[in-house]
Image (cartoon, rainbow, N blue to C red):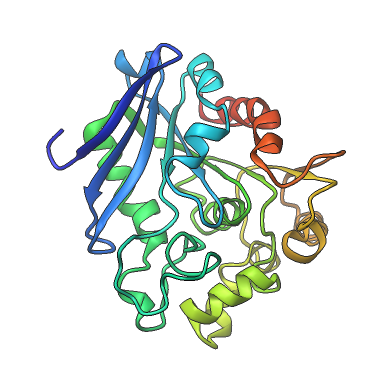
Amino acid sequence: MSGLTVLGEFACFGGVQGFYQHLSTAVGLPMRFGVYRPPEAFRQPVPMLYLLAGLACNEETFATKAGAQRCAAEHGLVLVSPDTSPRRTGVPGATGEWDVGEGASFYVDAIRPPWAERFRMEHWLTVELPEVLASHFAVRRDRLGITGHSMGGHGALTLALRHPQRFRSVSAFAPVCSASRAPWGRKAFDRYFGDDPEARLSHDAVELLRAGARSAHMLVDVGSADRFLAEQLMPDLLEQACREGGQGLTLRRQPGHDHSYFFVSTFMADHIAHHAQALR
């Protein structure tokens, strides 16, 4: 594959789970991502679904823990699992803390030096990566959905609200619903945005909704036993903002479930079906 480094490919449910790397012009560094191609993708172009992982994760997390490939094979969806940040950035302070910097991009384009040069995840995901995927795989660029877990759930909601023309379906598992309020989000936004209030609010799903942004109907699952539910996730704020703004939302509070991929894998089939209905 010209311009693409194959890191590994594995037979999976009649298709292929692969891991790849390309040199990103958006961040100026190599970026890694996983792609699951169902059997149908070897015959014709098919829709894609982004799977955005959470803090301290990478491009392998969703692919190895969520159990999504079987369902994607049944529905004919390509699954794309991007890395959670640039790596080996050389940015002071980008390593050493699990909840900010490398592995913790919050899927934004940073505006504060020195982060702004390398941490351009929004541009990579919405502009550059779709072109890379279309150049190397049989995919439909015009039929792209997005989901994610935790920080990745924040990314799924905010990117869908900021780019409704790009993402035709959206869901999230245990998302950080109001990153400008949550301790995880506040810490990251301090680094990436400094004291710019507009930048902070424009990457907060609740505040985007309050400002009038809309997306496709949202499916959101949270676990009632998630220890981060009240302090970090704040789904009640999302529910209120959707209700007040007329945004379609199915919010499911799953009894006994925590924040882990045991929770994600339990409801993965529902999310794949949600996206397949919109994208197919």
